Image (cartoon, helix red, strand yellow):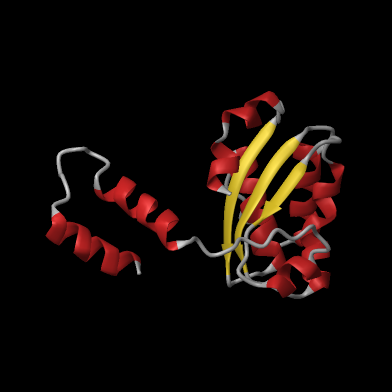
Length: 154
């Protein structure tokens, strides 16, 4: 999701608004809606009124194309997702919501297209590990360090 969000091709899509919101396991409709509003406007909202926050969010999204990433969603309750989604429907055509989750039921409750990520093969894991371990380029792996690295990757 981070690669998609930061991909230069996303700039070509000409989103008016691009925000990343970490949701985590505390999915409360008002809190999530307020967090999205605050991320979009950079304004704090202390309102305890969901309708008011919905109205402000709707006004800020109305006819504007947005990319919203909802990261680490755990909520499986469809009615709560639909309540959060209400003001999001007023964005311009081409607006997108990308949700990351570890639960297939979460994706199905959102009625979204599901993309299951497969586990990396060991050689792919090694490349990722090696890239991060050697990113400054001042360390060269000898046989002993390679063996330790391979055990970590395994």
